[in-house]
Image (cartoon, rainbow, N blue to C red; front, side, top):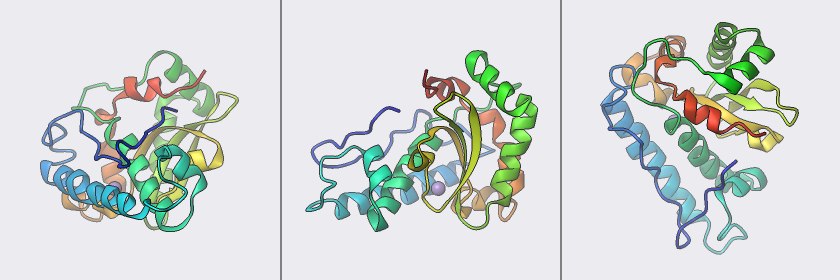
Length: 202
Ligand code: MN
């Protein structure tokens, strides 16, 4: 996957590729402003405060996530996870679905796109506590759904992360309150499948 390098020793807040109200009403402007502007900003500030004087100075975000532990791993993981999440969303599209090689890989691994959606929602709904549900690619090209608690990312298990939905309560509480399953089900029109497809490795 593409590496995220620090600039002048600092990681920067992801610039969203859409306006803060572009995903409304599925993800409201208010949720984007808190989730991206406050939660993600805090992880960025925390990591930039923790790295100086450690072996992680100048290292790419992905390498830190793979190899570090403790507070550095948690904050780096949350930055990488949110970057992958926010950058694979886009304004809602009707009949939104993957195409080409990505659709073929999903069909080969899960039977159909609809079956994949069901399995993915179930994995997100049944993940206990805070975490992330992922679509990831194995070295043999096949795809798997994984559950990662807290700040976990599939690259820590040598998998290539393609798509993630955030199941921390802060991702959905303002718009869906306690209804995590309803929020996961509502997100499909917002997935930017061309971004997800661009993450496939040959
Ligand atoms: Mn989050």
